[in-house]
Length: 275
Ligand code: GLN
Image 1: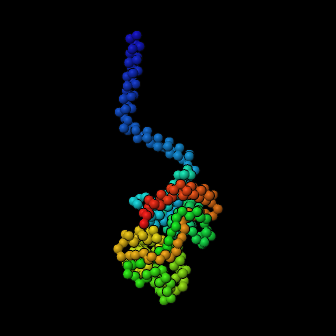
Image 2: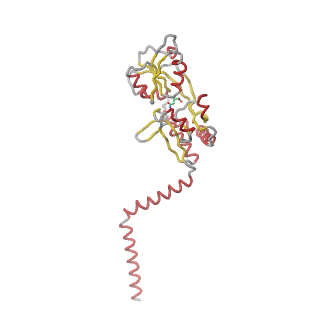
Image 3: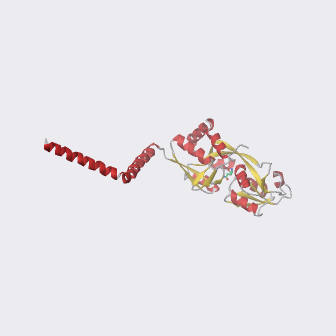
């Protein structure tokens, strides 16, 4: 009886020591445990995920895509992430020059391109587009008091303005075809719309042709600039896919649902305050 008692004592002492040991090292053990949990969780997510959707963009286009600290945020980034979540994909963004987006998509380096990208006949030769999710307008930014007071002024017989655009954008294409090729303008091409606007402020350009939403942001952030009331062109933004990509139908289906349930409108409203 005595012996049994002793054995029980030893056992419970051992248990107490084990308990004590684990509780005294709980601070060190906790992160190890949660790391294990995180690894398990990651493994589960990976098992459930269908892979990663890679969005090619040019994060110099507020409010559609721009840098905030280390993150790339904006309308396109949020819509694309909502699509990926809905379809069960992981999601990442690859930032690149605007005119690298279509090559990234056609070569398969990116799953799709989303960059306030206008649907054009020329682009449709190399990519397929989703339904449109937003309208864009090409506008003209001038210095306040500029001799250019309407888009028509750019087309005047004796016009010879210096025009800034972002390389490869529709602003670039229209200015090139309509004005430069007709001998009515000199075009300066920049990697970032913001750099074109800086050149305008520095007096190196007469105007900048660019999409209305980034134009509004650039003008609001700068003294002495104005956007002409007349519009250069009205366009539709859509997501670009490699031709005949299996993703087009799937992603477009998710986009249509997010348009129908008001998610896309809510994301746009969040970034573009109603006028
Ligand atoms: N909408 C324009 C285009 O598609 C500009 C897009 C952009 O600069 N991100 O060419």
